[in-house]
Image 1 (cartoon, rainbow, N blue to C red):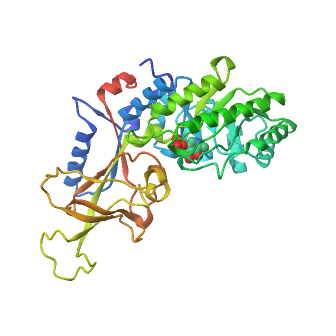
Image 2: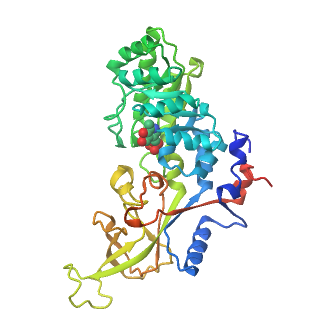
Length: 435
Ligand code: PLP
């Protein structure tokens, strides 16, 4: 319980009733929860897709962060998964929040988070959102251009500004520095402009790109940030904050382990920003916290059997191994799986059958489609699995990042419902229940 650092309103609002959290008693696991949910839906003749969010994973990931990056305070990136209970739990654990817009700020404030725990980490902000931040006490915000400085000086002159720099993101699967971040050559001018406008610049931020495959990218970026601190010092600015952004892997089968990045970061901090520098270090992890916490369950709603030549009208021998299967499930690229198009770190998924599968079962080449009328809505191609039947359930792991927050109800297919589960043991450790 000592690890839960925030007491007060966020804690109280995390009661199982308010958050609709399912406490798993007597050794029940999320797998048991999924089994029961599927049975229950069957009884109701319902086949709605759903996620199960395993809050134990979230908690363990937080402990892992504290152990490995003790100097770095996480400000969770809300855009990655904005499920209110996830935000409540992170708040109760003591994280801050990276918000990208007025409505993300509104959401986080509505959960009882205080404005000092928020960084408005978007460098190109609508005026009305800057004003909203200003009137609600959200002072920390990023910038990377003189135009943004002017907007901020007019609408939130008391802001505590963080200069975002472009860093080498060539080793990350999703790049960001083409769109955001000041070049090192221009930081001197930007800082001078901030001074002329009477603005306070408190620090530097960067983002090495999402799903960073090279831990040394963090070292180079921290060295670049040190260079900016030195320029600022020479111009008479006293900066006190370094924000090392996101980019941390969210699953353990990723090519670079979190611990490896953490070691590089700790060494680089020691070299460039040792504790006696007095610089506070924060980060904006998104997928690190949530990616492996969510499992998606989708239902096979339709099926077509095709012969190899795509002509389904020719004679199909029952059980012919040459048959190609087409399955249609009730979640897809317009719903939870837009990552397949937009997230280079998650450009394929491996759905597996919820029911037990015998190793002797014949596998067929299968295409799995999403439910909408669009042929781009394809989940997997040439995927070898046992024969599925309408009504079967498929599960997909590691579905917590850039899924929930990107899904639409295109064609009228409902977004997947989110069920939250936590074991009684973890719930007790968190000491969050009223009992
Ligand atoms: N911070 C900013 C400014 C971002 O744009 C993003 C992702 O796009 C994040 C943090 C979160 O990144 P990640 O999910 O890689 O940790």
